[in-house]
Image (cartoon, rainbow, N blue to C red; front, side, top):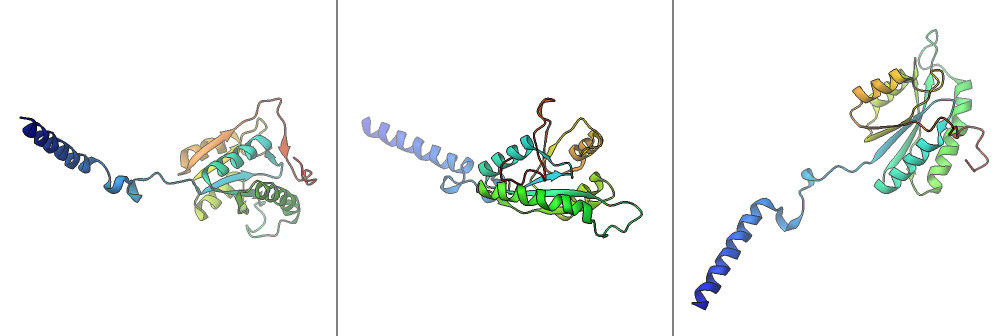
Length: 189
């Protein structure tokens, strides 16, 4: 009787092992197509007014955790009376020191950085053009209470509805006005 029990248990274990093979991936590994796609590029758009320190810090933390590259993008508005590819000396004069400060800060934290300048007739148009040219896995934007500084609530709504990526909108507390600006070139934000 003990031999029959051992054989029966062995057959049941063998059958369960075969059945489990249909539900488990071979070698216990998940197939490449079934794996979640890791975040590789995080877009961090900003305007001439600078960028929220909280949004910047969130982007750096996420990029570190996910081994992603941060892509800070200055959104430049081109007046309608000028061609879209016109030189924008004043705006670039503000943007370049800010991009440099962001790049230095991101690089010092061990995160990859790949900066952009996006042009458009409005901030939304510049962002739309950038999103058409580039692929991003995540977009982190700063919300503001002032319609003249940065992306408006309509722009943020458009972003949530149209962008085929994860969108994180950060709005600091009203008393938190800390921003990274072109004046922050002393190396400390």
